[in-house]
Length: 134
Image (cartoon, rainbow, N blue to C red; front, side):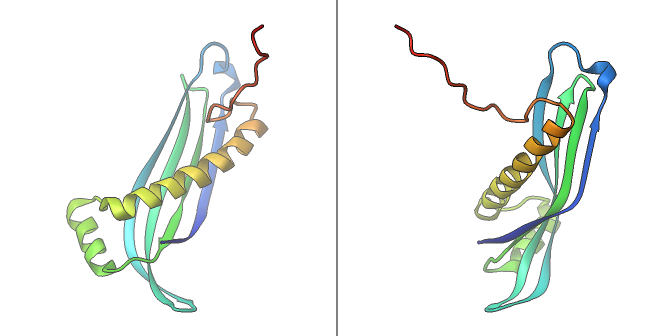
């Protein structure tokens, strides 16, 4: 179960010289590390800390928004999950899917705001209301 997600850095760049023409937008999360961490919350003594990097690129060379951070989650068998990560550099789906969904939700939500400040298109498509055809 996800108990929190924090950003440790946010970096954003825009290159106004390249902002004409078609812009391709792509977003990619990468899990960078996995470790057991002791914490002091009621009924929780240790968590799985999953370090991530998330980057939205505006190509060709228009700009980027990059986040690094951690997702903290409670899991059974934390030691086993950490050992699997160290051996395979991969997380089992029961951990990876909720972690990646949290990363996408947190980062894209923040990236929308940052993109607006940099006058870049939003990193996701919003619904567009159109008149009914008569």
